[in-house]
Length: 253
Image (cartoon, rainbow, N blue to C red; front, side, top):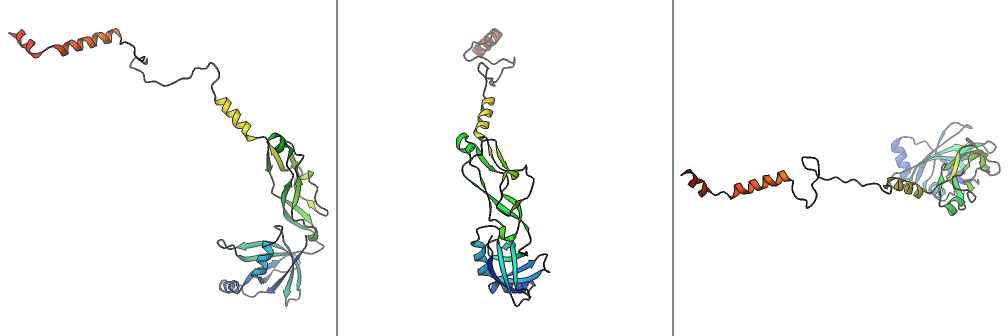
């Protein structure tokens, strides 16, 4: 990875009010630390650091810091952490990790894929990213922007593991060699079809429906004649309804 130049200044403002004024003046507070020296407070130009971050091709950024009026004016450092404002995304603070040119560093590098997997193209599979970053160890100058994996030959239900990835020159990929990085899974539509088939009734099965039953527990058939006992009761009821009050009066005489 090629380093980019960045100018920095020593910083004495550490209180909240002082830092607020510093940001209002177009400066971003920063801190540099590492094994080579004690942590030190710095400040950088807000526009310069924002441009570097926006135009960086990688999540990892290697900078050549020039610290004005400092005995150790030249520093090689990695941008370790950046704090942004939650509303306007302006840079609020930057942490630099100082490194040596001849000392290997351990960094997380993003993983990208190239090509169309055979399992996706020919069998309708789904390409799945198991790991989006890989931990690598290398010299700062050999730090890659990303690790690219060719998935063209990847068949369905197959995976590419950490141990199968060929790293760039001078780079060592760390981690369990048996862990999958990318894989091709079977089409999910097949699983849905299997569930649907299992839920459908088999041929010859009787579909049960709920129907309101009478007191005897049997549902009356539509249009069926009433039972014999029920017919007599109905007839008796009809006769009682036909008796007139005048007829009852004559009988008493």
